[in-house]
Image 1 (cartoon, rainbow, N blue to C red):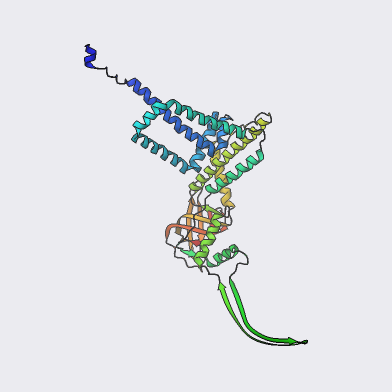
Image 2: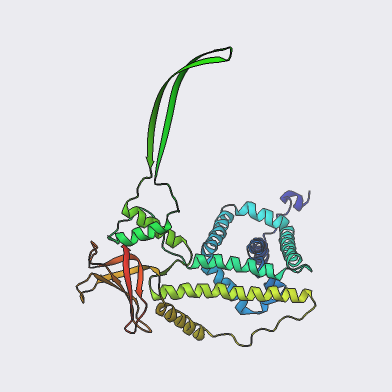
Length: 399
């Protein structure tokens, strides 16, 4: 009997450090291919125009195109970004818990997993090409559809305050609320209805013959009347209904908190409008390509960030100088001691110039306003921004 037979079969050599490293790299590459494929497939489903331009219009060579797409994703779909991060972390935790089972599958079918992920992404991009590079294109319809989508996104950006009961009002201008509420009521709305019911019991005896007839009638009548009236809302409820209608109607009222918040909102809106411009250009270039024409030349000069900031300041100044109609204000208000009339002041901005909202409360109104506090004001613009930096508002409701 040989020495080998006595010892038994030789034990397999443990993997070297290099082999472990290669195996781990293959696992990471395989799992990342799945994550990337899922991300691209969801992206092509939610934003097909952008991904078509990025790949088939070679916009991947333009860093600004990719950067603006990321800005829109962070500004308008922030919760989607958080959801993606949460899912990736959850997948990492589950992978850590079941790593032995997961690694067995990855080691056994890693090549097929990568091939399947690549094939899914390729099919998605081919589907985009087939859909958006058709000979029967309708650029006007695509532009209108894009414009409608952009308008919906802008409505989400320019949000109005959420109005919902219960609200503890500090002040209500009853006459102004009644006037606005009466304008919003449907015409000819039933306020009172009267229903009358009549009933009659009759008994009749008759005889006829030879052209002669006789008839005796005995009757008894009764009537009843019912009246129905619409429930009258309280002054507070009418005010809530008015504010909800104004807040939910896009463009019916301006909403101001601070200058910084206005600037951030405008930046988000500019990102959406820039994306619309690029997608419009991509739609027109696809149409030109279908006709055998060269792409339209791009604008030679793009505004710098400093020019964009200056333009936003110019738009804000013009908006405040032309302000009119109804407004919502959110901020820290303090009572002014310069006049006998109840006046609230809220500092909207300090630079590049000081701007204050000055809220006037009619003398006849009973207001229980703290000397200083966070308040929301719903009111009418009496005078837009003047040379002294004040915007005068007549209060309709304060809470």
